[in-house]
Image 1 (cartoon, rainbow, N blue to C red):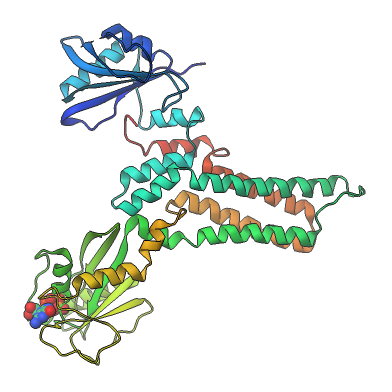
Image 2 (cartoon, rainbow, N blue to C red):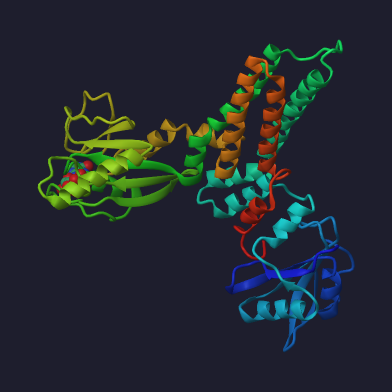
Length: 431
Ligand SMILES: Nc1nc2c(ncn2[C@@H]2O[C@H](COP(=O)(O)OP(=O)(O)OP(=O)(O)O)[C@@H](O)[C@H]2O)c(=O)[nH]1
Ligand SMILES: [Mg+2]
């Protein structure tokens, strides 16, 4: 049964030069022909024409695509009309009056999935691209859209299928003289596959940084210039700076984009024996910020200072404009006041996470759903390895099958309706 034709505004609601209204479904071209004249002579070509709405005639452009050669895989029509609120609304109304219905969030993309035009990772790639705040985030989305993870998942599933079928043959025809896997050889194969998945899961922390940025805590004793450094990073007078020790009492979060990466700075209260309740709470928050950090910029203005924590630390010798740090070799000398070496410090943080390398790699896990599926698959393979070790081939086959199933959830070949709906509901209307 063919689905009903749907319509939605694909551009944001509000004042704009143009707006795009999209219709998809078997009748979409027929519906468009009732109020847009002349229709383009052929698919994939834009034509300017008169779009008759209930109250006015609008000059618009129209293009149509014929199934299956469209985003959704169905007949699709797009109108490029004047922007604002009322004109697109009237165009949508014309579609509704002629037989279309309003689309729900992500319904165009869901139809693309149903029609085999995209898999779930492709769809999630689109969401990541739209939501990305940095170039590296967009790249991670592009890789998903380009099916990098999808292809790898299918390859892993193929290997599993091969192992499952050989194991099942061994179980069904034990007396036949076939070249069948021994428990030991099977264990080796499973371990290899397990290793591939573990390697992939090893990219999770890099993926979090790509998606959300590097959490950089600026910490140290009072008055060393932490807030001044935050301001220097931001290029604005964000935090209060004063010569009074204990100026900053609360944590202060600000982000910047550096190259293709986001830095999430937290300026913190200076660490010392607290003088009052408020300062005590401030320092407690400093410790939370340190615990949450990917890297701590330990700011100091003297040579014999140290900070003990189990985080990556970059020592920052501040006030380089007035202090002599000529024999310092375990950190970076900067001046928050003059800006000396502040760019170098950003570059140092960037390099500490090998962001250049990460952003050039093909496959980094950035999506929690994918991570969860791979973790489950990894657990199952670990169990299968043990079963193989114990020689219980029937258990091996069924566990490998479960792993195959879980991997299928990544691309959606094995995903249930709930997962699919949850993913597409994250799309905006008209996508
Ligand atoms: N000469 C010089 N003075 C600086 C530099 N950075 C900060 N200062 C001064 O050091 C004092 C303290 O600076 P803040 O940025 O408030 O220091 P803080 O570490 O945030 O201090 P608390 O919030 O009290 O922990 C101010 O008087 C700043 O002007 C610098 O690079 N050179
Ligand atoms: Mg401060």
